[in-house]
Amino acid sequence: MKTQKKIGLILEDEKPLWEVIKSSCEKNGFETITARSVNQGLEYLKKGVKIDFVWLDHYLYGKENGLDFVTKLKQKGSAWKNLPIFVVSNTVSPEKIQIYLKLGVKKCYTKVDFKLDEIVTDIKKSLK
Amino acid sequence: MKKKKKYSNQLDAAEIIKRKIRDDAVISSIGEGLIVIVDVDKGGKIDYVNRAFEEITGWTSKEVLNKSIIKILPREDKRGNAVAFKERIITKVLGGQKVVADLSEPFYYFRKDKSKFPVSSVINPITLNKKIVGAVETFRDISKEKESDIAKTEFASLVSHQLRTPFATINWYIELLLSEDIGSLNKKQLEYLNEIYQASQRMVSLINVLLSISRIEMGITEFEKKSVNVVALAKTIINEEKLKIKDKNLEIKETYGKNIPKLMVDPKQLTIILQNLFSNAIKYSLKKGKIDFKIKHQGSNLIISIADSGIGIPENDQKNIFNRFFRGNNAKEKEPEGIGLGLYILKAVVKIMKGQVSFKSKINKGTTFYVTIPIKNGLNKKKERN
Image (cartoon, each protein chain N blue to C red):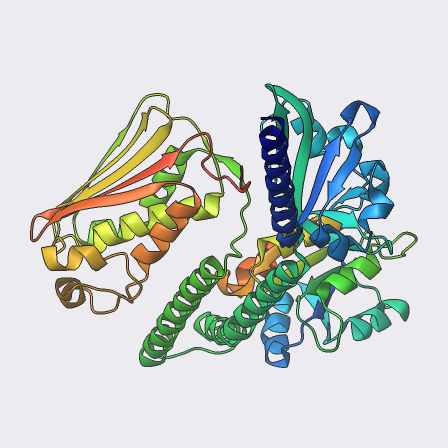
């Protein structure tokens, strides 16, 4: 029986990064769906697209940012409260990282501090 | 004689009145809100407020005199929880505790119109015949400062994102190409891509350094205190440098004192200190040189020292080495690529930790750096005022 591939929602405003993230995820056995804004990301979830984890940038297209997305997903009664979220951003603020972790994201990575494959492999490990 | 005494009494009275008018004018002119509290057993009654108090809170002096401080000026912490009177600093001062204004935890007062504002305050006991009879609090509305802090933090965050994102794109695409997952590359192509990758990494390091400096200078450096094993951290950093140490065939001697206590510090800040010390010692050492690294516990301090047998710092340059972008001529000749920010950041970070950094050096003989960090308050975020 063929194992279903896990699907990651890549919420990233930098379109040039979509391709390379997608490539690394596929190498590690994931499928991906990309979105640029909080609304776009939520639309996929509301449509019932089966998402197994979220790759979340902090600064996104539009007025809302990663924190808004996490807050919405983690609110009481949300159907996606337990969806694993991995924040991958270039924002340095330790305070913001603490807020994300308190809200319940699984891990935070600073893009320039990690190779892409390192992040994806780590996400794969965390999802096991 | 009676007339003389009556005249003298009148003069004394006039002098007293004059002084009272002057004192009232002085207190009235103080820019910060001032409250005098008495009767702590009865929940603390307001005995006097100045004009600034009225302007800040919207209450008039008439409305608040003899009223309970809890009712007129309730206090809330940053989480929005009401602070009970017995937990308020003013109560502790009235109870005999030394004056402290805790500025690390913002708290809020409420105006007459129920709007709240962030406050910075200082409280002093009023003593009469060695007995505490009340307390005086001066406070000010720090809304503008808090807005400015938030703006600075957001600015630094946005700048760091905008500067770093293109490099994340460059680095990740190069990694993908170098992995040859999407096609083989010839030797030259691999070589050139590696050069681009190294240059990109250098730019990222530079951006990180510049961002650290801007955060330190804007006073928005944040700390995450943890119990850190300094010896273990030092060994990790030495391990990270092992390729460069091997390249130059350097001899590293490590000496760790007995019972080195853990430090309650931000591990990232301590890493910056140790990385800078090692990086410089290795950079400016000649081949087959020696580096002597020590950590010892002395009184209430931890002393970290690193001695190299390298190029040394010319005497003329020694007064400038902690300045931004300064590099001595001999350093530039030895290592053309440096930017002259490492020691500046090192000193700034040590200062934040309430520590000290010093050095001694002789040209062509080597340099020894000493970093002293207080153990108990390795990182003290609270500011105390008397």
